[in-house]
Image 1 (cartoon, rainbow, N blue to C red):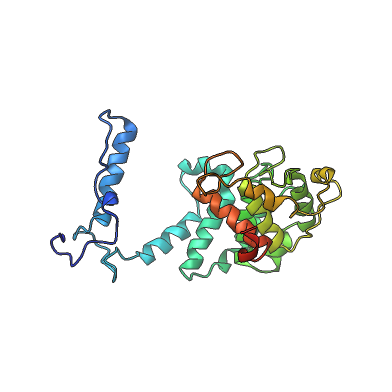
Image 2: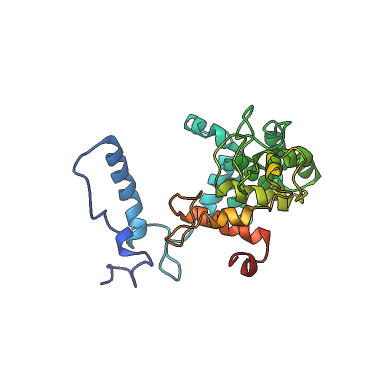
Length: 273
């Protein structure tokens, strides 16, 4: 049955266009905040004619392009105090915003000088980037920082990256079972493998392990050694891929593992192996 004033229902599953079918009777501050969020979102999901964005050919709300662009530009300025919780994820904020602006066909090279200045203090002399000023190197912010520098481009961006130190640092997080830790003495999972191989590939770093890499103790000579086997051990009985062997499969980890394998070789060859 069509909503009044609508030619067809939006292309949204019915389960997502109504209130949750199962609700806890206990009211808390969290449940009240959730209800407020649902009330704001439902008009855009159930085809309510009073929404002001208009509809596209698929009867979905139009993208408020100008509003999105303005919001993204503001996110590269001074942020509200609540964003202090993102202090260890500063490179990610920059990366996400630049990606959004790039998709909107905005000129992001205007931010080149600021991006270089921001990341120059996050790079450690031991290699890699921390999530904020004075923080230890971690593979996730290193990934976000390098990709952000690549997006804004220019010799000053590329020249900022200490490729030699980064190569040495990656050698320290390469593990004897074939995988990668996300930081020295940190957790080991497929995120570390994917981000590491992206950096090695994008920056054309040597595939050979540094002479002092711990993984050389088991006979590994390159970053690729043991990696496909490690990723295969992350596949679960469900068919999905988990973050580490013997854990639950997850879509995001499946992406990391399959993308990592695709960097190692042609997907139709490397993935079946």
